[in-house]
Amino acid sequence: MKSVLDYFNERIRQAVAQYKECDIYEIRMRINEPLVINTSFGEQMIMNCVVCERDIKDSFNRATEYSAYAYEENLIEGYITVPGGHRIGVGGYMTLQSDKSMAVKNIRFLNFRVRHFIDGCSNKIMEQLGEKELENILIISPPALGKTTLLRDMIRNISNKYQGTSICVIDERNEIGGCYKGVPTIDLGMRTDVISNCSKAEGIIMAIRAMAPTIIAVDEIGGDADKNALEYADISGVKVIATIHGKNIKDVREKLGEKMFSMFATKIIIKGIGEYICC
Image 1 (cartoon, helix red, strand yellow):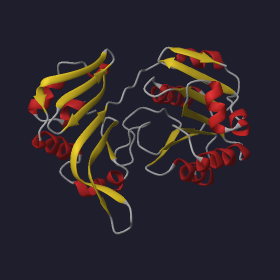
Image 2 (cartoon, rainbow, N blue to C red):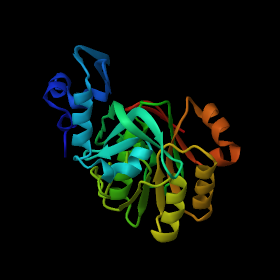
Image 3 (cartoon, rainbow, N blue to C red):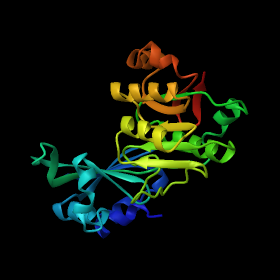
Image 4 (cartoon, helix red, strand yellow):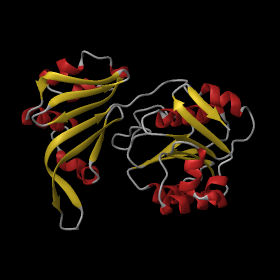
């Protein structure tokens, strides 16, 4: 599996290598500004490493294997996912395409979001769930507290533990399984299928019609299309494990509406990996 260091030239690599990859959450490259590394112990601004155009170009070329055209679909969405499950957000000069979509033409800003996989972080939750039949599960937390990391480990645990289970992961941004050319680079278990690079709503309906899952897993549910697709899953008898941004149960109930919120029998509130309330 590729290290995040593989995506930088020697100058940037030396600055990043001061920190353990497991401690790094984001690496931000902004043209003509100091390199910024966001870590588990706070923001680190590397004042003696001012990012230049060459640094950004080198990193982008390494990430796209010098074939940017192969990543056009993702770049329209403003990011690419690379081997190792890392996601790279891009910013710069936007241009209008012939199909009326927007694309970044001159890339001048990169945000490397470093993938983390904490083996066993869902074990205590799995113990609470016990041997009973799984119900719909909603994982709630503000950004950057580990809900996607927890979701990954729950998928792997359930997939390996429950015989007869078939999980289908709808991985819109390739963040859950870190798929590269359709192949997950993160272990999601023996009984897991992945549909990546399509909207959550489309993927949920496609999975139910084509893959016959017993469980669907999806990250960061939001709009009406997601809600309608999740209702379709519930009506179809397919269980759902989902995450959502939210401060607390009251906040999420208001976002989803009472009908959708009540669909989830188990709610997990994350205060950070290893700190949660299961209710």
